[in-house]
Length: 95
Image (cartoon, rainbow, N blue to C red; front, side, top):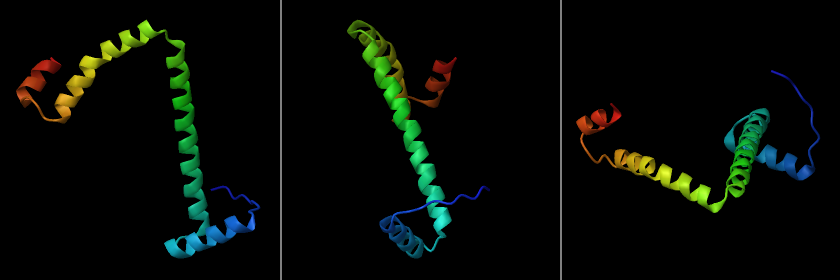
């Protein structure tokens, strides 16, 4: 594992020390977890931004066509999640 050194403003250092004490965890673990969460959020935000850009680039008719195409799949997934239909019906529908 790589070691880094950072400078923290006093209020962050106090918060980190307090969290470390309350959670009974080392400060390094708390910082690693915070960084992992930060990077996961960044990846999610970038994906959402790309999806938003792609959706904005579609004209209204293309967006409606995509939604209509996906609707049966959404309905099928919902039915499966709600356990409608027998296992045999689901097996048969899967081919």
